[in-house]
Length: 132
Image (tube, rainbow, N blue to C red; front, side, top):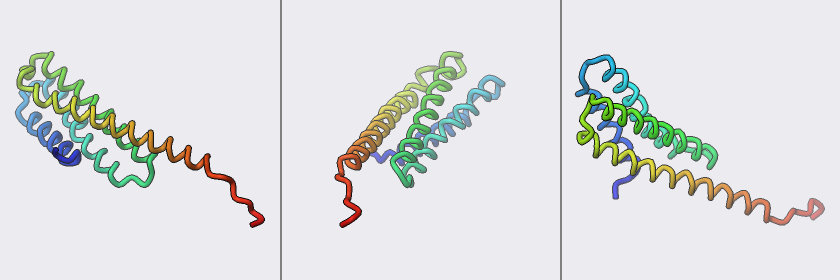
């Protein structure tokens, strides 16, 4: 299975290539730029998450990636539904967006569970007697 860092980068490259072949109409360019911005931000957020200093920061970056992925899926849907790009030409890209969303949701849930477990472990520690 490919690494998530690699998959998000490849997703961004596919979005860049898609933008490059869109028609030069105003609608296509506006929607395309939105998809370009959000679609390339997913990987950037994930890369930042890899360098997180805390679980809270990790969760924030992963959820940022999720927000960008959700937005990208919306722009891809608009490109197809408006007839700017045939839906069948976007099917693989939309499927990859769905898969990446599911993976990122799992990453976020796992990080939240870790945070709760760590908080529970801290609360469960007996207090130190300061006189010892």
